[in-house]
Length: 402
Image (tube, rainbow, N blue to C red; front, side):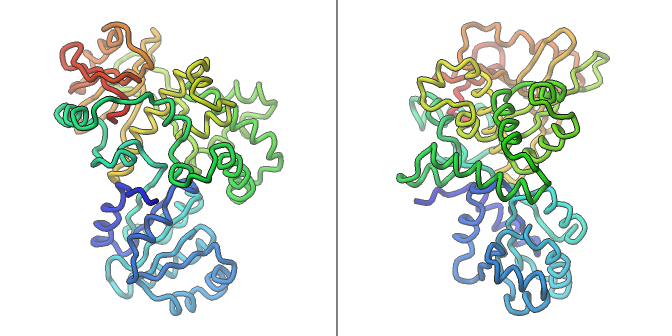
């Protein structure tokens, strides 16, 4: 079963304005499957995962492009980054749009090659796991949509379900669409493949067991501020290694750093970013959480829910082909706002809570009154089912409506 991706229309539109379209993202999120369906019979599909094809591209790139003429889709371009220079020559000679579709999973070395070879010629798009909006089959809007859109979604979709099931299963298409694939089997295989292939190719990690411990510790500390010294102390590794390993997780699409917001308030703002796991199913697996009951009783259930919401918000932007401007806020007085969205010169503040018991959930929003950027609407995103305006232009929003 194939679930349509919101990014499909962005790929088609980008092909009309750029000679090269590249889709990056973590492994197993559906990049190749999506582009193959869009390619149809008019576009040749070539994978550099094939050793024979890879050798030809590495040793004779000109012959490779002569043999496989555009329009073409080249999968796993990171295996032969030197091919990008020859693609540049090809698109400059033809001056036609939509010639090359590329996919790649290892974003750091891949992006370096693109910046050197294809600047101004390529449209970069990012795909992560399936979003709740894609699973629901509804149209996507970068969060937050208008209040009218939220009300329409609520009316159309009816009662919301507990998010625990969605959190446990994560967003990998293979796990969600193939009945014979088990959760534990998939995540165990994913970690081993990820460690064996991607990590060793991005950087020289000699102690993969220690690295897996590190990944598990990051999962257990999702939705917390980055503290390099704490990781270093608990794992017995130096700070340089911690930073390098965090970079691996970020460039591989496993985590995202949510930056701290500052608007020149004249106050001391905490500058450390918050770490958020992007696939909460993987985070739960790493933390030994196997079912909904265990998740509902876990001491980190609130942090996992917060990261799940953050990941869904990021996906809503990435699926629009947009670069999100998302932040969190915390000042010296420990007043914190879980999510600030800076959009069209306006701020949209949101608290993220599993359960909401009173209107005091908005009490920290008062810190925004002295900011030069005007505040539009905001609210609290929670695990419940009711969509209501609780105070002024602040709404209680079910997470299922993101």
